[in-house]
Amino acid sequence: MTILVTGGLGFIGSHTAIELIESGHEVIILDNLINSKLEVLDKLFEITGKRPIFYQIDVTQQAALEEVFQSHRFDGAIHFAGLKAVGESVAKPLEYYYNNLVSTMVLSKLCLKYGVNKFVFSSSATVYGDQISPMREDMPLQRTTNPYGETKAMSERILMDTASVNPDFSVCLLRYFNPVGAHDSGLIGEDPNGIPNNLMPFVTKVAKKELDTLSVFGDDYDTIDGSGVRDYIHVVDLARGHLAAIEKMGPGVSIYNLGTGRGTSVLELVEAFTRVNNVVVPYEVVARRDGDIATSYADPTKAEEELGWSAQKDIEDMVGDAWRFEQQNK
Ligand code: NAD
Ligand code: UD1
Image 1 (tube, rainbow, N blue to C red):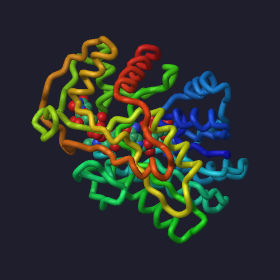
Image 2: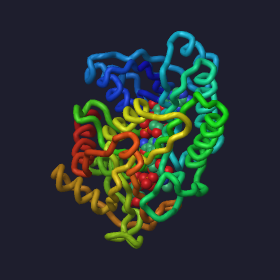
Image 3: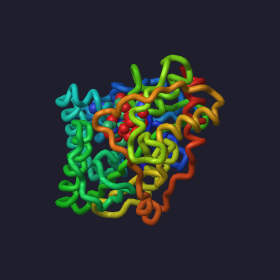
Image 4: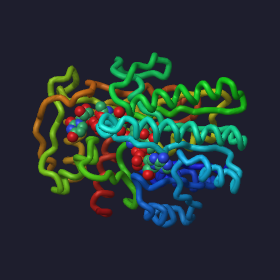
């Protein structure tokens, strides 16, 4: 298949491009480089031996995007392009609603116009809100606590409504849990700008002594050791979930959790990082972070049954690969 990958130079998109190329698909990448670097394209070539066609385009710009649709015949689109920092979304709501919603609408409009009938969307476990884990795809969605989360819930709704009146248009909503890790080549991984908000990139910066101490946000949750529990998933497993989705998605709308089904606490992750990488991660327990929930992990059964996909990598692989990338690339 020929697959359009928006946001394909970013963290998850670049790993997915590798899996698609290595499975024989042709990949065309669009990215405006707002949160990624052009050199990722060279890394994709180094890893796969193929250099995907790349357009530096903002997906919200319909005229520019339409020229790409006129130049290629796509069998499907995977839409990663989006802004993803929760805190920034609270400070800049209009930027987040505009970028994430307009990009989804413009892309789906052109997919309909040019007969591109498979649309895979990057959603998030954040749409479940604070419910009892394991999260299942048929749970009612809860209002999220920030504009970023709302853009995911709203994009899901926009795509479902669009699919319901366009029977040929198939939509697959993938709800990611907590993506971490890096490609085992050590060439690509997560490279956030500035001080990271998410746990794993913060831990790698502390291990590298670029930051002094990890703040553990709360040790009084009702969890195994009081710290927050999440379902960390290796980005390569996540990428393979997209390959399975685009190859096997059926008609209409399908929704899948992409998680491991296992919860790991903050303190367990720090312990695994220290043990596997033999490096010290100084930490201190501080107050809970606003908007955090105690526990979030997936029920991944549906993806296993319908897509034949399940996560294969464990927390040791995740902390090992994250550290290798940090050491090799910065
Ligand atoms: P990322 O920031 O590394 O990748 C997103 C890419 O999209 C970047 O390369 C960025 O330059 C590009 N982009 C953003 N807006 C664009 C636009 N208007 N036009 C063209 N390119 C644009 O993020 P990621 O971690 O790879 O996430 C990919 C998707 O998955 C995002 O939609 C994100 O919200 C979603 N998601 C991520 C996580 C996570 O923890 N990483 C969790 C759940 C969902
Ligand atoms: C966050 C977002 C979520 C988004 C996801 C992936 C919030 C409230 N939620 O999820 O919408 O989909 O990222 O991008 O921001 N922690 C620390 N110290 C740190 C950082 C994190 O103790 O410095 C803890 C958190 O309290 C949490 C766990 O580590 O228990 C994971 O945090 P994080 O990596 O930020 O992901 P989420 O909060 O699950």
